Amino acid sequence: MKKLAALLALFFTVLVVAAAGDAVAELQKFQGNWTILSLIEKGKAVPAEELAILELHIEKNVLTVKEKGETVVQYNFKLDPTKTPRAIDFTHTIGENKGKTEFGIYAFDGKQLKMVLDEERKGRPTTFDGKETANYSVMTLKQK
Image (cartoon, rainbow, N blue to C red; front, side, top):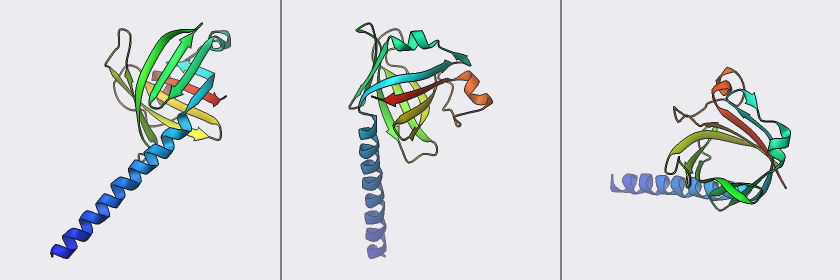
């Protein structure tokens, strides 16, 4: 019985370490500068000229958006690549929403990253397309 308990403990430890390794590898994909290809906020597309003046940079687990060199939004984020769809949680580090967390999902398609985020903090999105996304923000990014 003790051997079985020890084997189960080892098995679950291996699973936890593997999941942590997946999160580290996944976080690496986020690093660098990104171009915002599209942003839809609650069903309304943000005009391309407004997106063109934004700079998005990710370093470690910090996502920063700048407009004309000034930081306008900054988040700490946490990934859970073991969820389906993959989960991402954004916690504001500045501004009126400082300390508040928004739940989202993400997916990579080559060098593009798509994220769906619930800015109203009512729950985690479950799909990337369809009626549900009309209540969320949907962002498509391309790595520079």
